[in-house]
Length: 249
Figure (cartoon, one colour):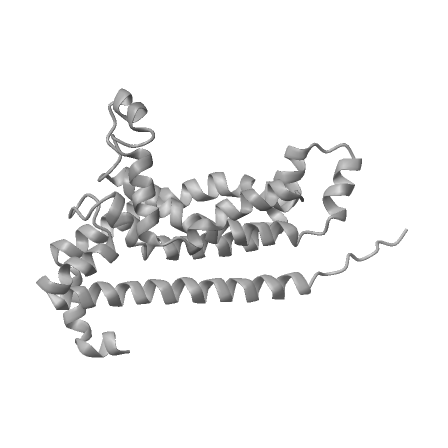
């Protein structure tokens, strides 16, 4: 409320039209959509694997996946830098390919993917674990392979949880700050996301910083409300399953 009451709505809208805000919106939208695609593409099979396995190996893998949730953002950023920078662990490969990763949009995508992926994978694991084990078992007895069971049974039944996890990961990615500024820097129009723009505009134009903050508040509230409404709609639709009428002989 303080953010929205500090500046009139008209001034907030006009501030969002500044070059810094527009550039930050474009960079944030582009990098977060790519990161979300990577998270869903690689996180879905990883979550399915974790949901269908038991034992120490599974616990170790899940712990590594969840590590960004508790890892300080600065540590995540410097870890990505020493891994993908030219002088880092993969620096020789990066230099051989002639590709610069650090302080580019690719760095933003990697940073967002790293910090936001646990939000999707944890929710996806819970969604897959919530599927009745008798259903894939019955499909296997009827001759369906693991791939067909995954695409025809597990994915459709878990899609509600997967959608909620994707929304949470997207919201977390939009607000990413620490790892991004360490690994990608804050170059306007290149790597400066909405969160980084707030930090820079705080001393330059406070109204622009407020406007971007208000935008992030609206996006975050919309995502959280959408997840709740979607979950309520899913529970309502699944509870009202019509019975098949028996046809007379």
